[in-house]
Image (cartoon, rainbow, N blue to C red):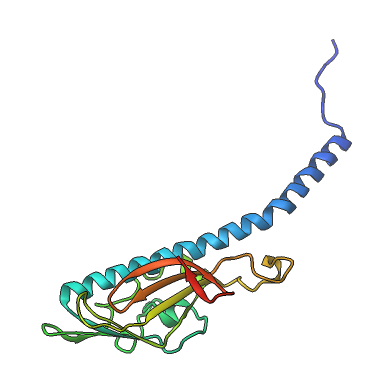
Length: 200
């Protein structure tokens, strides 16, 4: 009896391999972009959530907080600007970065008061942070507060990679922004490099 089992020829296997390779070549950059943008978006939510938590604590304790970012308009690692937890696992800048004063506690720094509630998350290793001001003050709702707005920019560490730029040389990765007023109004959006505004 003859076997009717049919196999693949070498040409058929070669054609399938070429098709799969081309598919990966076309889809892989998009998948990489999506993954990197997701890291930025996740960390943006962490920043926004941390600011909401800080604002809630400021309102509860009737504190006035002075925040020192050390610099402005320079992209740096999150632990150099927002987080106390360093890559080594130690805590740093506890008193230099934030000071919140009220009638009951006096003046208290970190980590009792902090800008990021969940420090050390994996996404922080993939992003860079920049602030529009080197200093900022947050006051309880209903009190006199700083009139201007603080803008925090979050972008991927891969933002300037040539492979992630379009034909006109602009990065395909979006820069996210979180804005907070001295009285605690918080919003997030996408940063427009053309208008230099946070588009909510």
